[in-house]
Length: 295
Image (cartoon, rainbow, N blue to C red; front, side):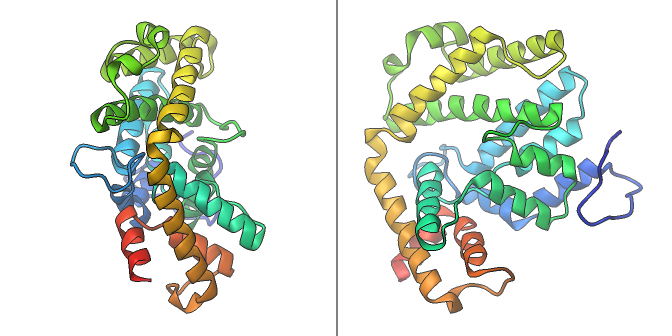
């Protein structure tokens, strides 16, 4: 069936679209989705028009996920909605922003921040279907997705960001071609396009044979090894230290002011912790930098 479990608040059917198509449309027309264009992946508010943003990452993830879903004869509308919604809750400044907000919430409220949980909060506010909400929540973290479509997005998210972040790191000068780990590149391919092609074919062929969504051991291990390399050298590497400190300082400054002066927050419902989290995590890189400068 197109929809097994419905929505948090029941709605009548649409005569034209499936429930998952409606979810996709709600996401595309939402403010959190539009703001993804102003949130960078790795480099904060970079000079240059060709670096990835959360928006382009989301579109790449969704496009690749649809290819896999179609090849495996699964629900393309469901996989598309999960793909479009998976990063809507991400903070400004990528990994550094997420870590800074998590740390601030733990110190001030004893809470925590995980972008997948914030993405779920947004999905629920849009009254999306349970299947889409589950896929969004479980695209990262310890919990496995309940659907094959959710499992596709979970793997393809990594396929997309590892490869496009290599491309951005090469453009930025953080990496050179000779720095990339040789064994993994020889197995997966010398270019981003070839690596994605290899990873997609492996995912489809292995999943078809297994009756579940899986990568082959060899290719899956190579991808995880490349991911570990990117965390070590790019996401948390020495080159991005000043960027991360800048991101952390901006997030901490805004967080402290919003907690101490809640009148600055836009009108909303929920606890102070929730309202500060919603507002700060929803900011684009540029808005957060300007907001901090104005303080």
